[in-house]
Image (cartoon, rainbow, N blue to C red; front, side, top):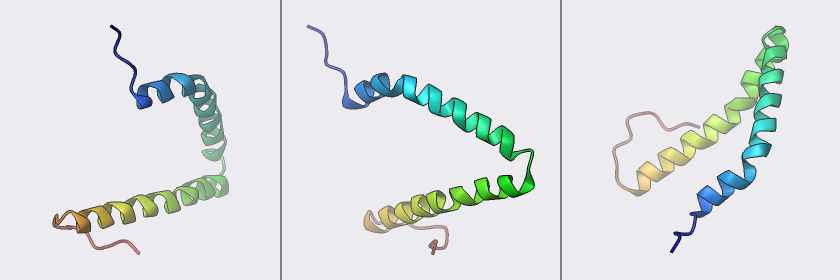
Length: 75
């Protein structure tokens, strides 16, 4: 009997071609960004909110499971 695929494996298999296209577009945009300081700055700034949200969630998870937080809480 064949073991059923995990949901994450199904998702990876069904979206791999879309990710390939998306990755190619990101690389092309980065090449443009590296040639223009203003565009490069905007690209870096667009990741700020993503990393801030991740850090806030990690901090919240650490608070709830009782682990010691070694870094100041992100605002």
